[in-house]
Length: 154
Image (cartoon, rainbow, N blue to C red; front, side):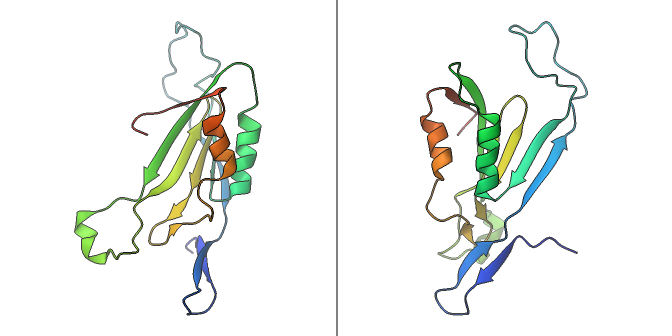
C-alpha cells in the first residue's frame, strides 16, 4: 500500500485547507566505502566508516528535538551543513500549473558531522505545510553566533 502523507480538513467550501499527516522516520545512511585519510589536518571527529543517523520528518516537534539534541550550545563555533531544495518549475508540466502553484522551498536539510535532519516544509501541489513561515527554532539557528551555516548556493 502507498504511504499517504496528507489529508484534507473541512468540506468542499472555500475554507478547506491542506493539513499534512505528520511523519518522522529514523534511518542510517551507509558508511563511506573509502574513509578520508587519517592525515587530514585538523583531524576529524567523525569516523566515516560508521553509518550517519538521519531523521526524515515534516513534524516541527521532531525537528526541534533534533536541533536540541544535535546543536548543543557551546562557546566554540559549530559548523552546520545547510541546504534547501525547492519545488521545480518544469517546462514540460507548464500546462498543469495554476496561479496557485507553489515553487518555493520544499525541503530543509541540516547536518552536523554526526547526524542529519531532512525537514519537509512544503508539499507538491499544495505549498507550505506549516503555518506562520519559518519556525522560530530555525530562525534562532540563523541568528546564533555560535553556529556557522555552511552550504553552496543557498
